[in-house]
Length: 82
Image (cartoon, rainbow, N blue to C red; front, side, top):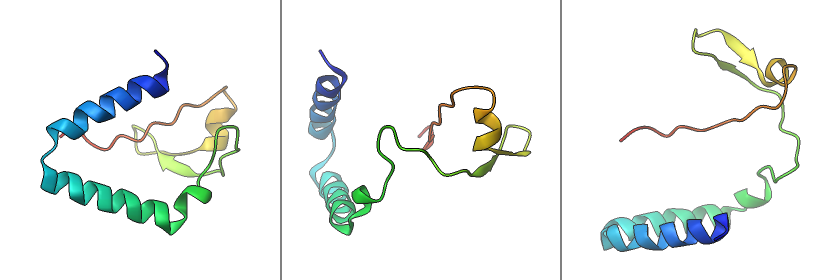
């Protein structure tokens, strides 16, 4: 099974567990984002990300350029552990 198929299966299962009122809010938000045109502005596979600076674990600012000097960078957005 491909990753796309696995994600579709996971999404389908999630949608069955989410209450209808919350699902409606999520769908409205997703539709709004899609209609805003934001998908046309985001980076695509193979695009070069602009340089940015974020604090590391020691609260020292470190740039993407600095990290790339050591090799490839994987960036993960952690939304929380709720």
